[in-house]
Length: 265
Image (cartoon, rainbow, N blue to C red; front, side):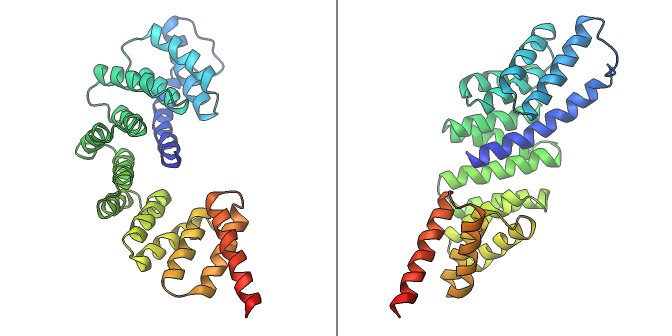
């Protein structure tokens, strides 16, 4: 779920670029004078509402926009994204299919549909969509997202070497892709390459020092290397960053055991 929400946010940014281009046709201080302009306003405002988390309101506007302009692929793509947020995966897939019927080269819709497939465990279908994006003349942001999601598919299959490779491709497209660094670190840990994994988690922590997952996983890498004192410090940071998260609770158990062992000495 964590990877899906991150992916949805990335796709939303791409949609917002298109919506902002459309908005130049209707200045904010000028009321729409015909259905086409109203359609563009509904599309723009619907995407903005998704960004604000007002999903149900966004769906109303986007459905209205779709009724007025049924040949614009960006509208069903945005509607599918709203349905993806609501976890209505069958309807989201139907909307992405519609966008692709209108424009078979619409890579944003391919990426979105791949996410929906992945969330319904249709991993082969998801992989096909993401592979199509990586092989297309797609923007770097879309290729980055496709590589990242291919890594997530390999994670689900427990194919750690392949996952590491895909996250590396995502990082090559965007050297600041913190989610890809974190997930690559996890894949490297699974392969017991703790030194390289630690480097990934430290990279994340330079930008997000309160990232509970990176703190906890860095601690595990340090423990695997026999650096227990330093690992304890990262466990403490994990607890401070997210005491009620799964990683925070595990870190608390570790620290409680460390305290017990110290008292027994």
